Length: 165
Image 1 (tube, rainbow, N blue to C red):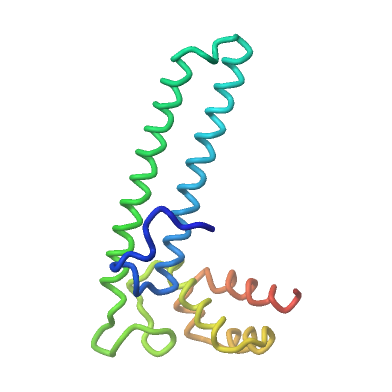
Image 2: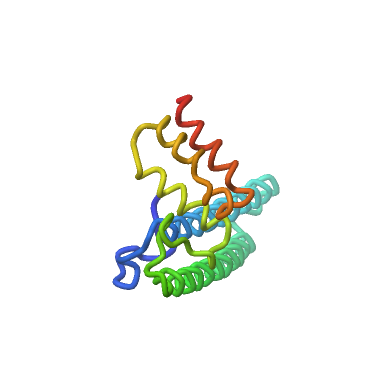
């Protein structure tokens, strides 16, 4: 996936963690979906106007310009939301009186459950390369059951799927 919703090489984005990269990828997917829907709407309009021999009219160009402006406005909202999420997540990435946040030593309970899921998944993906040992270690992790809540089973199934493949 090409990331162009923000410039990842910009100085302010040089020290992002895996959770923040996941936020960027999700925002990029939203942008790509907006652009795809706009292109599809333009194609539908073009075919409709072509069937009425009206493609060369300025109405088509005006309609495309309005669609592009609406798409750009939606993308700006997604970009602004992403920048706010990145700024907010960096507030809680530092740590607390127990030290820097890290799973499992000092988990960050200020995160949403989906963000916790990404952190725990990232932790277990780097613990070992053996999928069976990874799943066994995760199954014995009592902190993960509490920390992830209903996402625990989802991560268990994800880790189990790596064994089958």
